[in-house]
Amino acid sequence: MFGKPSRTGRTLQYVALTGYLIFLGFPLVWLLSTAFKPPRELVQLHPTLIPSNPTVQNFVQAFTEQQLGRAALNSLQVSLASALLTVLVALPASYALARFRTKLGTVALGWVLLSQLFPFVLLIIPIFLILRQVGLANTHAGLVLIYVVWALPFALWMLQGFVRNIPRELEEAASVDGATRLQVLRRVVFPLLAPGIVATALFSFISAWNEFFFALVLVKTPELATLPVALARFVGIEGTARLGPLAAGSLLATLPSLIFFAVMQRRLSSGSLAGAVKG
Image (cartoon, rainbow, N blue to C red; front, side, top):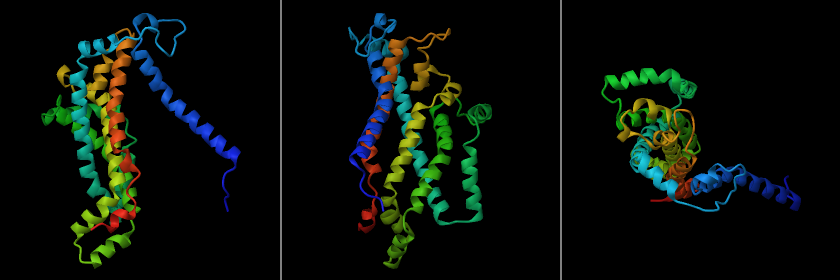
């Protein structure tokens, strides 16, 4: 019914794709350029993309003035813990929602989506009071708990979609061959869910890595501050930003997310039914 696209159609597709890549990549390129510019070039009336006199002084200031190394380590610990716990909680819950369809499950899934509509501002005061009551205020454990709870609704919705795409016949065939429920999950379901698990982990990691509001309100000790909070300190009381150190710190802040995605992105394209015939 649909023939191969014409040469003109393919050209337009490549042009649109190139424009989209430029649109996505230009802010990162400009951030890289700003990070290496000396103070004089940052205030030029007509800025250039390539620095005339590149310098690493902005990176030195970013690390020495705001302890970005400690803040990055804090963010890494919180983000990894949040991603791991989110996957561990969402995996069995999403399987139950997808496979055991009941009225209660439908209501629960609707509530999961509805909970995403609540704004942060309405929740921050009760959350802070609860965490203080249980002794988790101003701790990384409390921050991880909040990130897991906040990421769970979308993680559940995403993972249960992956579960529903797995044919029930594969599980039934494994059961006929004598596999127990646990063996079916371990040998059939989980290998096929690998792309969904990776996507959920990526979402949880990046959302926790980039989150600013909860970290600003719930963590007060400077040594426990996460990277977004540390970067905010490069903006003065009057709203004047120190562009050089801020750009250098922001560039370094994007690297873990890019590395984490580059390492795991191959799993996103895997997960075909080949996993069902293993073992």
